[in-house]
Length: 293
Image 1 (tube, rainbow, N blue to C red):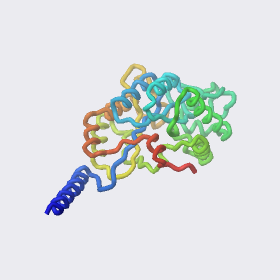
Image 2 (image 1 turned 45 degrees about the horizontal axis):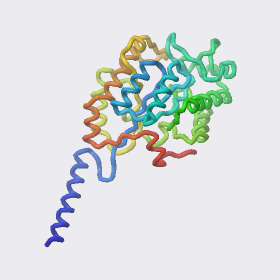
Image 3 (image 1 turned 90 degrees about the horizontal axis):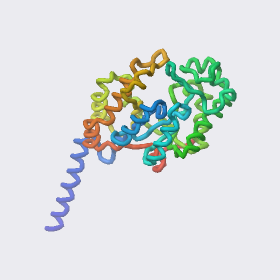
């Protein structure tokens, strides 16, 4: 009789696990995994403040450093002081902001095909391509960006790219893959993540939190990537104007709204209720969940 009682209790426990899994939107043995990647750390002081807020009080799990940008040293210091942050190198060949530009890490006379006549990175992908960038110079500069991060005590967990310039031609993509192999780092977006489902980049600022919650509620089991651009509503960020033809207007509104969304108690409540697993690229590296071609 006691044996039958134990079997009955085990059956009820298994049934309860299945029911809870269904209610949370998960199937037995599967889960929703989400990487929340922030781009453009180091771009402004306000951005660095936003990253700290998003890492410490939000759901941000990965942050990409723009090494040539003006506030990189401040960002690097923050990363050294917070080694639990999973950060990557946001490989950059553009400086897209009006009246706010930056140059390569290398002396610009060594990478002349990557810069304009004043030695600044080009503001748009098309302007970059029109200057016929030399693959050899591109590789030197991107390697220098990774090495500068390493020299500042950063231990990157991944690589990714700023804007679309490095995605436009196969020879440029090949450089990024070569560096990923050399430094044994995953490339964000190439680890089996679904990036499209959680795309809220162009969602109106006042709707970002609501749309994110809806997506979190309806996501099916799998590995997802949410890309955000943390920023704050400050005079510094209000002065930022995107020179890309399709660039967002009032960028600060979109960036500060994304910070609000990823630090929202409502968002975190949905993640907890659905038992969504927040992942970083450090997690993927430790679990061996990426391939080096």
